[in-house]
Length: 313
Image 1 (cartoon, one colour):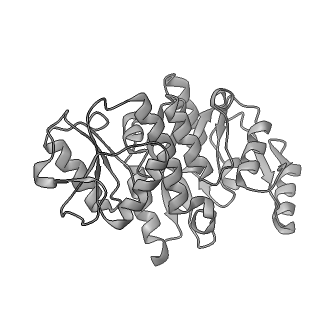
Image 2: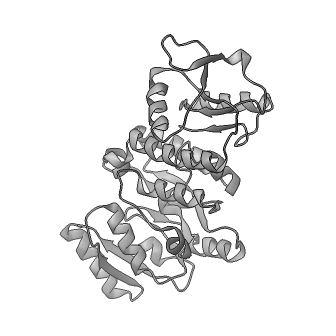
Image 3: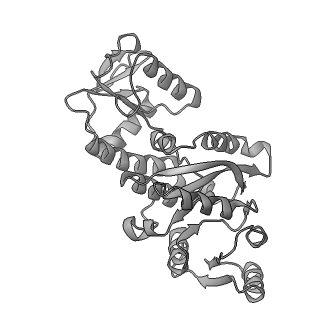
């Protein structure tokens, strides 16, 4: 709340959503709300993060909505820079920012690597290309036009990460997302955060929502009569394949560095990949270095991202 109160921006309101807060937290929030007329406290109409978020959305009066978590900190110029950006970029409906992770501990090294990946995704084209790998934006760093809620709906509760599902749904509808190069959010990581412990943020939950919107994307951008080729043939990849097939995506072949005995699809050696325009590739290999190498290999052979291949996982 202090980082909000010190914003170099006029005309803001802070809506604090009480979602089953403990007594100490509630008393701190109430004290701020009493002392500052720009701060209001409301109570979530149901348990759960999505209900809390949607309660907050229903209470916001502004044309722009910024998201914050109760334990993060924002740069004093965050709201000003993001509002100015949306004012001057009518074709962009959501703007995020780069962020840092705190506190720095050996336990959150993986999370810092994830944030480093996010921080390199800046343009609308970057966000579109990378959206099926992972969530390309930090939820508490975003500011978006309220009109998006009216047009495409808010947060859903269906057993998947609620923010990522909303970004994918909005991008599926053509919403353009950008990210400021400045570091405007300090994102707290700890062992008890929901993204680490709640089943809605499991790998399976992320895969389900990716599969849902990849299937929608393929309907909007059909590969025609080209075979659909999956990159990767391990047992783990075959498990992912079943989730995508459950969304109606039908694969014709797979490619890998080795032929996998018992694989149900036709094998294509990496050394004999179809030429550009002759197949459409969907990568399901998640390792950072391997995923990057696959993107580089396909591009070196003349394949164009989103036209000849897409990266998932």
